Image 1 (cartoon, one colour):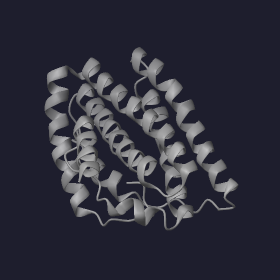
Image 2 (cartoon, one colour):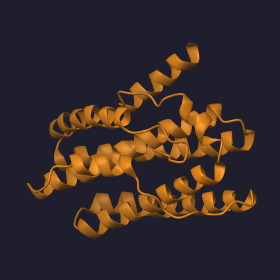
Image 3 (tube, one colour):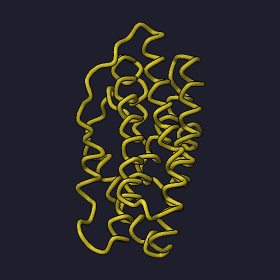
Length: 205
């Protein structure tokens, strides 16, 4: 019971309103090739998202300066997961549809002022990082593989920093009050999405 309470505390610290179902880790470790494949593509897409933000908002100097090293870091994570697959004689599978991210993207408000569109993009990125951090933490604590415990602890720390960065960029460019208000709406919707989606061990989200 105490372990479960600590998991909930971390979820609340990240702002999330619903913890991952505890069965997820057990499902994920049944087929490491599948979960590592999905993880690899999550890192690749994270790098691509940062590149896209830089391309769309080159005039936002702080954004460019902060996200440029994240591109390098995320691509390094992609390579690290590939190396882990190779070390275990596992193969990178094909990229699969990310129903979680697609559901978040459907919740984005379309149109509006440039600042509003930027806010939507930054908050989706922040939410993906927060949920990834929570799931990496679960793997770092509960997976039955000591090496992967340490492997995922490093990813957990990185994702926590990225989550904070995206929230801070949103506050800087879009205003603190507007960011807080819209973030609350995203958190409510994200909890609903988590309840709607099937628990799958071959998906990082």
